[in-house]
Amino acid sequence: ALTAIDQVDSPSDEDWELNESGFRHVKCIGAERMVDENRQPYAVYRFSVQDVAHDGVTKGKAWRIARRFAAFLELRETLKSPDVLPDETARNTISQLPFPSKSHSFADKLDPRLLDQRAAGLHRYMQGVVRWASRGAVLSFLYDDGSDNAVLDMATSQNFMTGSESAGMRW
Image (tube, rainbow, N blue to C red; front, side, top):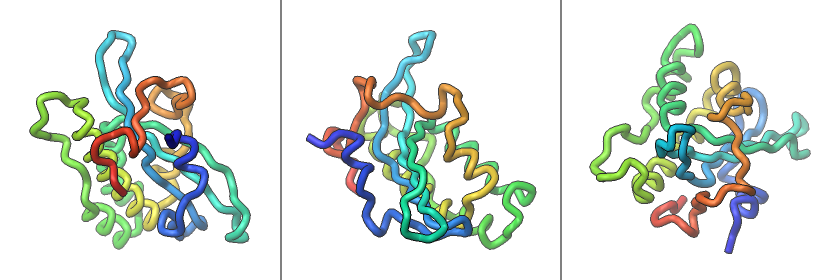
């Protein structure tokens, strides 16, 4: 069976997007159910991110992040501001990108089918975002900020869902 690490080590050509800072690979690699300190369940969506050096050939730094759905909602709202994203074409294009709905018809907000749908939608959304913006708020979002909402240790996680283990992640 593929592990999460196996899935992100060899991105395909369509996963690489050219933007103003060079090539950047951003790919949703799954969703994970977590429990907070008050034993309340929540989900995070994991992404692999990789830069390519300015020569366009040498692989640059690679890292993984995990964000809650609310963080993506916040990023989406933030990118609507001309103060954050001055380029009107980029701002308008990003605001038109399809985004997974916060409301859903599932009885459980952690239903694997819902997590799969959101993960696929967030993958497509972030692919569109990095085509148009890779500095400021987007760059901050894609880097580890040291918070609990940032990079989590996938190797020790028992609940990580990969595309082969979850019901509907088919990208």
